[in-house]
Image 1 (cartoon, one colour):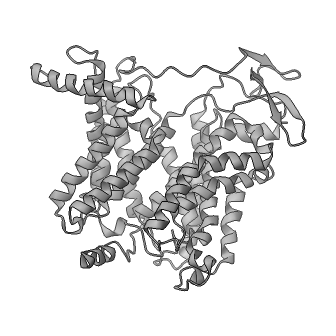
Image 2 (cartoon, helix red, strand yellow; image 1 turned 120 degrees about the vertical axis):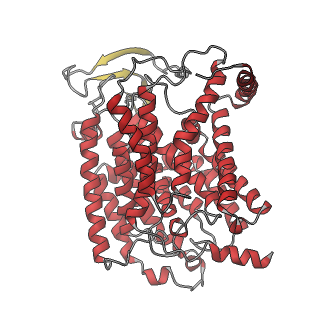
Image 3 (spheres, rainbow, N blue to C red; image 1 turned 135 degrees about the horizontal axis):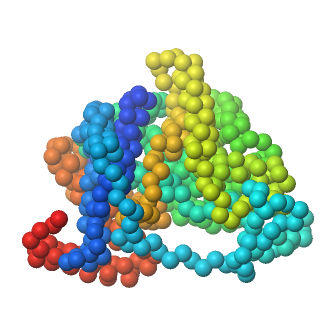
Length: 538
C-alpha cells in the first residue's frame, strides 16, 4: 500500500505543463459545445408539448440530451481528445455551421419548464419616481422608490433610495460560470487516471496547464460575482469598512472551515504547511472589501496591476525554496500568492462591472456624474455590442502584456507560475476569462427553452456539489488503483461519475430540495414506464 501511495504521489507530481495555445484549444471545446447546443436549441423544437410523458419526465429526457451535447464533449476534451482538441472543435462546429446556414429558426415558444416565480420586490411603490433637477430621458433619470436608511460614515443615516445598476440576470454569465464549475468537477477525478494527460495537470512551480487555468478562473469568477452586491447598491462602496468586513467574513466561514479540514488531513500542500487554496479563497473577499475606498479613487484595472506589481518585493527563490523555519516561512507560497490572486479577483470585479449593468459605462458614470443624485433607469435597454467592444479592448491589452512578459521571461521558457500567482499568471487568467466572456454565445434563452437543466444548480449548489465530487473521488481511489486503469475503464468510471453529478444537480434544481427529490423520483418512474410503453420516440 505504501509503495502504491508513493507511486501515486510521483504520478501526480513534477508536471511541467503544456503551452498556452494547447490549453486554450482544449478550453475552446467548451465554447464549441455551447455553440452547438445553442444552434440546436434555436433551430429545433426538441421537446414538444407533453403527450405520453409528463413535464417532469420530459425534463429528464432533456437532461440526457444536454449531457450528450455539453458534458460529454467537455469530458472528451480533457481525456481521449486532449491531444487533438482542434479536431474535436471541428466535429462540434461543423454541424453548428450547417444548422445555422441551412435551417431557419422556428417561432419562439414557451419553455418546457416555466421560470420560477420571482420573489416579491421589497418596495413601497412600484412606480418610478423622477429625480428633481434631471431630465426623465437621461440614462440616470428614474429610481425605484425604496427608502432605506443608508449609513454614509458620518454617524447619521441618510434616508436615500437603494439604487440598483442591474436590470436582471445575464444568461451568459450563468453559462460561463457553470461550464467552469463543471470542468473543475470533471478534472478532480480525471486527473487520477492515465487517460488524463500529464501536461494538463497542475504544474509544480512554473508552466501553464488546464488545471492551473481552472484555479485562476475560480478566483476570477469569484471577483466577477462580487460586483453584484456593489451594483445592486453602489453606495455600499462608501459605507464603513468594519460592518462590511464582518458580513463578508460570515459568508466565507464554510470555505475557511474546508481549509482547516484540509490542513488537518494534509499537513504540507503546494501553498505551505498551514495554507491551501480554500484559505486563499476565504481571505480574498475581506481583503477586497478593504480596497473599496481605492476603487472610488482610481481605475479598477490600474488597481489590479498595482497589486500585482507589489509582488516584485518577494524573492521567488525564497518562496519556492525548501526552508521551513518559522510560521511565515512554513506558509510562504500561500502568503506570496495572495497579492496575485487578489489582483485576479479585482480584474474579475472589473469584468463584472462591464457585463452585469445594461451599459458597460454605467458604473463609471454613476460616480462621475454625482452618484449621490444620479440614478439608472428602471428598464434600461442592455447594450451587448458596447460591452463586447470594451471586453475586446481589455482582452487585447491583457494578451499583449502577457505576450510581452512571456518574451521578457525568455521566450521558450514560460515564466507563468500558479504557485506564486505572478504577473504573467495574472495577465493570462485575465486575458483568457475576458476572451471567454466575449465568446460565450448570447442566446435567447427564455424563448428557446431556458438554461440547461443543471446549469443554475451548478452555481447555486456549487459547494455541496464540489464536496460530493471530492467524496466520490475518494471512494473511487479507495476502491481501485486508478493509476493503472485502462482507458476503457477510466472513461466508464468518469462517465458514471459525471452522470451522477449532473443528476444530483438536476434533482436539486429547485429551492426546496427535499420536495424536489420526491417529485423527481416520480418523474423517473414515469419516464422509464413511458419508455417501455411507447412505440415511437419522435
